[in-house]
Image (cartoon, rainbow, N blue to C red; front, side, top):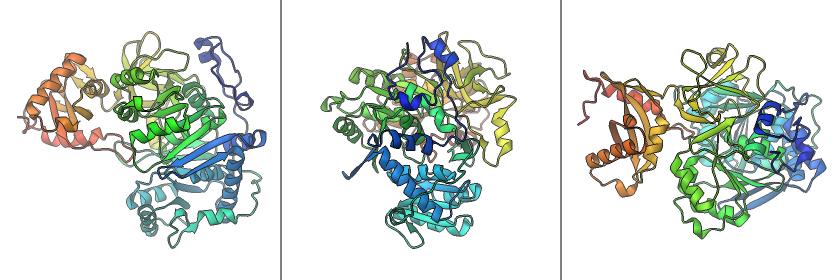
Length: 574
């Protein structure tokens, strides 16, 4: 039996058709999620917990100044009802678009659930948006209301965007400052009338969430999910995070990103777990370790970058005995991070792979042995496969694009499309196939291994080289803090590998030619010799998107202007 620790059966059994399985094969073939008609996560999960176990812990919030709040499910229902009533008084109803710029404040949970209860559309956004970003989003999505933190930079950018954002009718600040033109959120919910549930709030096909994805090229795309989307995160929380109703789970993510609903909302509360929120302005690894120790956190999910910083701390100074389970997402995991964390904590990092357009496609289940560097095996709610460039099925050991077959039905959790952009939608999703744009290979045991984005794969002298495999090799060298692998045009080889590297402070003063040679030889030893970077450039920082993804396209575009002599080599190569 592979049913792991899921003792919050009272909630799960409403949505999972079968609760126990005899094998991985049984799970893959027979795991099904039941989707109720007109499902609404706020009513059908949160309010149900409040009715059945009102005193059950739902959310623990603490900030970097020592303030903290503890919320039960009864509390969450109370405040989300008050917020829903308040938003109704401001004219918000079914289908209205509302942007939430709330960082890690606990009001985020009140607001997003209130919008769900009204059938409105939540548009989570980062506080890093500029005036230009807000204007673009407001006009692209016809945003009606903005709810934001009352911090000068954020409120000023929102205010400055108003003259060019005619659809925005209402501004709300949660404080601490309530600038002119903004409603006071806390006064509003305190004075709100008793909430009366709308007679008809939503259908399953209505838009629940709209995310502006931070693509590495062009304007962000608008990904829309319907009201059934939260149910797909049963797999995320129960079969990847391995949560149950006694868990205290920390996912490190700002609420402006899709990772927040992956790890700080939907699946966690279906599993009955308590969500831990650390509201901090600056990431300090020692503070995260102290939170785990002091609050007895049981489960942690974060990008590999976070774990790379954690393992640089002296972990022996902290009591991490409560921490039982750790998962990785957001970027590919390199082997050095996995091995070091395992050595220091005894915990095997379990990787998963997904996109803003969906939930987990691939994951490392609690009952399977992780393979170093593998993303895991397919989620049974998706029909995952690999195809070659010509569209034929890739064999085991062969690189191919990860695809999702959708000809029989739209899988639970897969997006509805790109909002107001049917052309872009059909470019990635057509003829019964959703094309993820990610390249991987599969081993004989069915584990998938990340290679890179389709646009990033380098073709050199007949070889196909994934940026990640070279980046992983370089990241194991102590000189390298960050790196980006890109291609450079070459007349003889077609393309050659270039590494753009941010150095550790202890290596910044070393002679660059000698260090370049050392790093090249190091990559030859760690991975296949043909993959080594023939060109290495040292920089102070890498170009990134607003969400922190490396913009390899920006590096490539600059190089295409430089590498233009007869051999396709840089004029300043020497």
